[in-house]
Image (cartoon, one colour):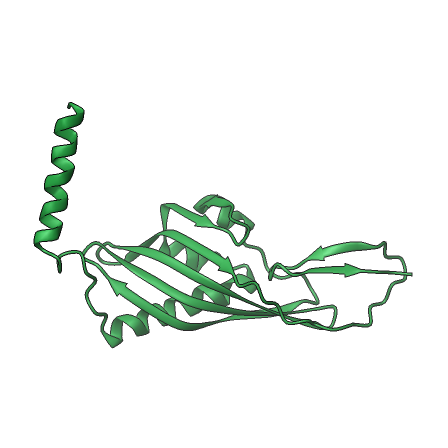
Length: 186
């Protein structure tokens, strides 16, 4: 196809969208739909600290791509492989807040605030992530094909903690929350 024909085709498609301005707008989501996404997202967040891949396997499409908080693109297989339980002695959780759903004919766009906390060596670390997901509307279930998480720039200062230093070397510990702790040992 020549460049002129290609341009004409694109202009024709754009004209159809302009002529039908409501065609691309999302449908308003029912309370039932929002409740389903709220429960599903909370199950996914609850499974992270436990390293439970089953909820993710049910929702993620085989071709799903995840953008990590560091901006790295991760395949479904790599994401599931990296999902491990918190190490012994650490605790944490993530609460889904401010969830919104926009439904389109072929997919739904889901956005929420993932409010994460961890206790590391007696210090409570808090980080929030703004999450965006696209789930294709396949019957009988929805399948996630894109997931993007962005850390918010503010972190609560966990303050000083008493750490037993016998036998330890100075090093940095990077937590799942993305906060780096520098263990200055004497």
